[in-house]
Image (tube, rainbow, N blue to C red; front, side, top):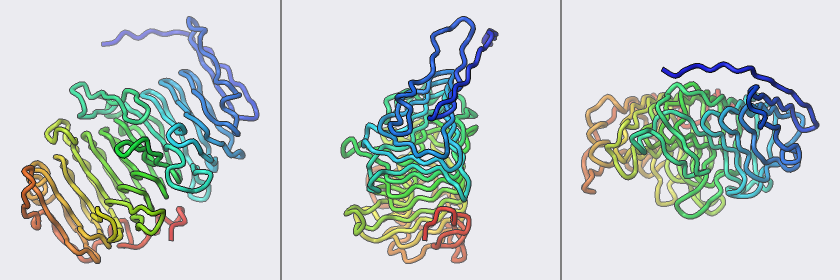
Length: 391
């Protein structure tokens, strides 16, 4: 048991044209200082929110994200409903929340928080990156270093709380370092289920819409439209729940690059038996594709992932379900894991491949339901997603 040490806390609240900044320090620590107002001005928004500080933005202003905004362990960034960000800077412009830091970006259906690029093209900036203390199977300790930001994430605290994101729009993200390393719209590294992810809309990104790198966070009412890679992606032992997800794939005629899969699911790319095993529970999911490009697949379940998916609509993909590696094939072929699946205009409903790259039968891995509604309205936009403006 850890000893509890109590110290007096002194807090100072400042107000400027930029934001409210609350800075707290212990009676034996005078090193804490407020962030530079020069760095955090709306017309050049970048810098570090340090431990003990709570930065609250002003919803009447537009913030020009020109560099990295870091929320350190013990710091809080609060973004009120209606706040808008315009971003530029490619891989050098993103928002990252360290383990122990918190972000509260809470919009409303009529007044969301909006992040977007200046020119409205994919990859103009990085995206949102949150690092938590929940488990990842990348190492025995559950801790690893994020490919984005190169910071520690993960641990043993599955109830960890990194704050909340509600009614948030993320456009034009996904800046690329190289062919194998890119930002997503929202990257969740070891994020715990004390964190709230609800009503998120990601559009026109250069890479994945949302990716879960381990963790136990739950996510509801997600919409991904027209990203350059996969709409939804998980790996490293993610074990949360997902409810009401809707995605539309980008055809290659737009921005010259087709999107890929509706869902790409791994346990771990180098060790499919690494524990904890990815095993999310998803319900009410729709993925809508196009049949151009090399990876027109509704859901690719591979690299040892487990999972339970119910009420899934897959529309307009060349392949519906693609299941790979022995662990994943055995899990889903055991039946009861893929239920109430509806295929609409899908050329090949399912295909399977074992670890030896040999074709295997997975046609019994799912049950079909021609009346399945998916996210709520079959292949069409569900009513709960009306706030996004997606047609």
